[in-house]
Length: 112
Image (cartoon, rainbow, N blue to C red; front, side, top):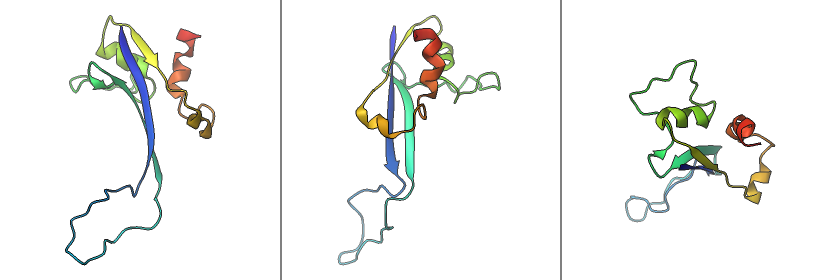
């Protein structure tokens, strides 16, 4: 049994370090505002880190990597079972319903 967790976060296009290498006395030039939001979503395991196909495995039209995590898990770990864990934080209510749960929707036939 392999635990697969879902991790996501939102960062801004202009997120940057607080420390800069600039000559003494000069002011840093920074863009105004935060820029566009970037939504990052991934599945993680303690076995291989990010759940992804190994480099030697080819992605084909029959196996779209962005569609769902279960076929990727089955290709990566043949014969193993996955336990998918999702974070139901109240902050997720700010997203549109089912906007980022596409993979959960793909799994509902298995769990519900």
